[in-house]
Image (cartoon, rainbow, N blue to C red; front, side, top):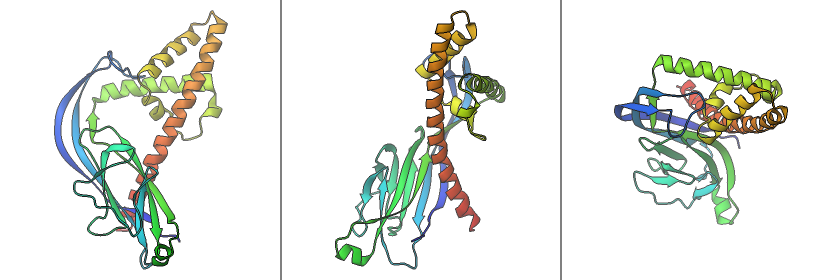
Length: 257
């Protein structure tokens, strides 16, 4: 079967806007942010509606979210508005059926939440499958990543951050080697995610390497920095793949209009 799982709609509703002041010199540091940043924060809810387009084939449809079955084909759950928390993404509420259609499921972010992702997997059965007690079939899947806030920062601050991230990209190539980065990989985006203890360690290790003098210390620092870069690359590719699959499905849906 080649029935598609598509994004039917992707809507956003703003709940509030306010000025935000963040001191990146204290608390959880970022790799390329320091000092006071003042911006405008927008809080919103975002709802993504998915649909398994199986017509004209007569199927019973269910769903598994992040590996947990939340709706079995032919035996749907009773979920009351505004929805239930998605397994593994507690700030995302899901609803199924949608308008009494069991092949549709919606996901809604909570205003103010950080990004969380849900891997939605289609489950389906025929009437004969259910009558004969056969296991469900697994259909297509899609990752949906939602957030409930965004901040618009001053252009000069963002320019400083981009320059810093470019500097770290050069360090990555020098220490880890180009073979660790594929053409077109958004290295700066990956590095922008580094924060907290990882950011502190990366700065310290880079300084130890650049200081020279003690070659044994520099070599140990290079080894650990390579390990940190591998983790940054892996985390970035996982996050990028999830976001890309959601965007591609949205574009495919818009193209049909």
